[in-house]
Length: 526
Ligand SMILES: Cc1cc2nc3c(=O)[nH]c(=O)nc-3n(C[C@H](O)[C@H](O)[C@H](O)COP(=O)(O)OP(=O)(O)OC[C@H]3O[C@@H](n4cnc5c(N)ncnc54)[C@H](O)[C@@H]3O)c2cc1C
Ligand SMILES: *[C@@H]1O[C@H](CO)[C@@H](O)[C@H](O)[C@H]1NC(C)=O
Ligand SMILES: *[C@@H]1O[C@H](CO)[C@@H](O)[C@H](O)[C@H]1NC(C)=O
Ligand SMILES: *[C@@H]1O[C@H](CO)[C@@H](O)[C@H](O)[C@H]1NC(C)=O
Ligand SMILES: *[C@@H]1O[C@H](CO)[C@@H](O)[C@H](O)[C@H]1NC(C)=O
Image 1 (cartoon, rainbow, N blue to C red):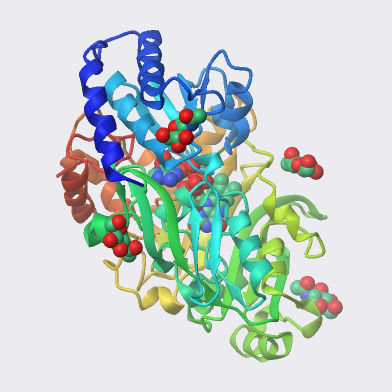
Image 2 (image 1 turned 30 degrees about the vertical axis):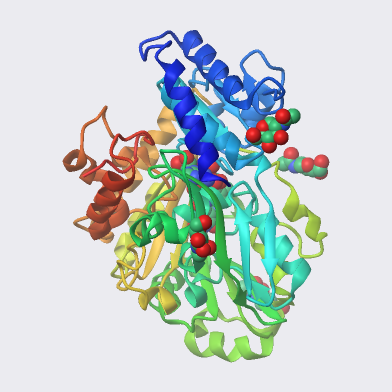
């Protein structure tokens, strides 16, 4: 899009901004924003279908449409003054300009899956730029690449790829409703990441709009900014409007399995073994574990249940000897395996039946519960005594859920500074802890439980810093306070980014020195 038009817009608006000072009331901010937007769009252009105010009947359904953590549906949670749903990049440019001028803070939302709701919650007057209308996907089969707009979900991307090829895929996460805007900018891992790396490892170009309203591609943004948005989180640097990705090869037949063991079936020893086996398996084999409690499983009452769930990029026949040789104790046989296509494995890990029509991947609606999650990285196997102590804590809760994701494979070969996501060599596995908060009344009890669990795990996980995964956002790790800077932000910044945090803060200083794009855990300029 023409840079000249943008320049024109910026010049013409500078003149009338001075009408509304930054200290205006919330309503005045809205008015200022709307007037600014309408003025730029011109008399023939309406904002209907683009800007939704609180008085619009679409405002509430739109706001709720992608809230994936019901904790943030409560009426006490601050709501945006306005929701902008751009139909073009031009609308985003105008929205940025007018929010800057009117003093409304901006939150950008793609799929809305942020664990702490940062894409749609703020304590200061703000608006949401929701990219729901920008979700085209263009696949170039000759180049084995695709351009995917940020508002698309990973389900829509997997679907689009499968419609073109049975032997291509993309290494992103399992939940089909995640937006590629947030997911790719924070890393993004799934069932084939030990073979191909993270979603952001497979991004080859990007289109974004910076704080000055300029549309940038990889060449124009510079390699430092292109580096930063692949794992450093999008929300600190601008509005990412599209990613160009490299498709990866998948075989025409893959094999999945999912078997569970309770404590009386030897789950403790199996999980203890799993810790050293899973990270060393061939990169084609992903074997994660999901740990929960069951109230019904056996006559012994409440017990911990560990499920071992795997995806192999190959046939059941080839998988069998791998499992029997490397993990004899699990006792898997051919009939424990299900062969399927890669896209069926996407359904499988997204929680659908593999016989469902692929169109379920296009659904954007999803039930949401109220939850709190946290994450860790494990570098040395947890001893049996540590696991036994962990079970005692899990058994105190009704709905604890731990997902243990094995690293290794290509993840150990990519350098820690290749992109901002630093969790590479030396990690056996990552842990995600989560708990259902059930209700407002019960929430504090469950919050307290998960924090005690996190405290218990300290001796067993990465130290100095205790590392965490940005896409499992956790505000307990620390908050930006006002304009407090880099040193304070290190408390959470080093956990997510380790040695890459400083570089991120330098990129931030170059591209957004005024800290326009900010939230509770955005990168401060250094
Ligand atoms: C049910 C569920 C399952 C999950 N499973 C996985 C998984 O398998 N693997 C995994 O790696 N992660 C997983 N996650 C975590 C997920 O990767 C993150 O929540 C991710 O940030 C979601 O992206 P989004 O676009 O949906 O979120 P949003 O809430 O829209 O955005 C997240 C953050 O990115 C910013 N952002 C969003 N879009 C843009 C943009 N276009 N430009 C600039 N900034 C932007 C937002 O402002 C916010 O700070 C899961 C989350 C949930 C809720
Ligand atoms: C509205 O503005 C956009 C962007 O300038 C332009 O492309 C479009 O043609 C305009 N529509 C009308 C009806 O003027
Ligand atoms: C980026 O945009 C510039 C200016 O429009 C263009 O010359 C260049 O070819 C683009 N780069 C890529 C990789 O598309
Ligand atoms: C694997 O298959 C066997 C034979 O059908 C079955 O008995 C066993 O329960 C299965 N194993 C698991 C762990 O589910
Ligand atoms: C989503 O919509 C589909 C189709 O309308 C419906 O069948 C499904 O039950 C809905 N799912 C949820 C979680 O609301």
